[in-house]
Image 1 (cartoon, rainbow, N blue to C red):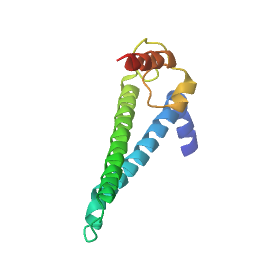
Image 2 (image 1 turned 180 degrees about the vertical axis):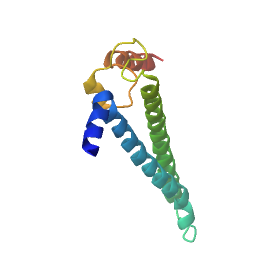
Image 3 (image 1 turned 90 degrees about the horizontal axis):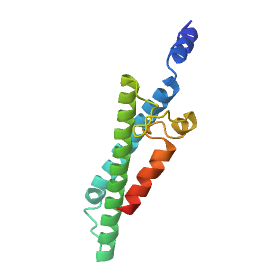
Image 4 (image 1 turned 30 degrees about the vertical axis):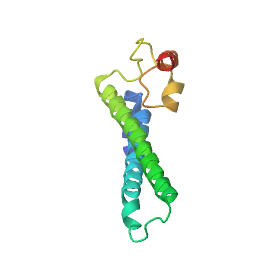
Length: 132
């Protein structure tokens, strides 16, 4: 009977598949972020006994650490967007474009389940960013 209950829940909630994908993506990104942050912050400590001989080595190490922390920041932004999408599911606004109010096509939600805008509004936002 559990399969029947699951099937009924999915019928009642058209976004159940997206909800599951968002939770899975959130868990994966959280783990990756923690691993990258730990690696970046511990990089200098683990090699403290063998300091780089050349300044270029030190610069490369700093660049790698900054790049990793930048990637963590980008993934943090995606996590925030996932949380916002889950909140929109709770309040009933998920699947509607925040800018124009039209329904976001299912194909877009499948590709980017945390999106809050339709393709046309996303293009307009990108054009506005380029103009700034």
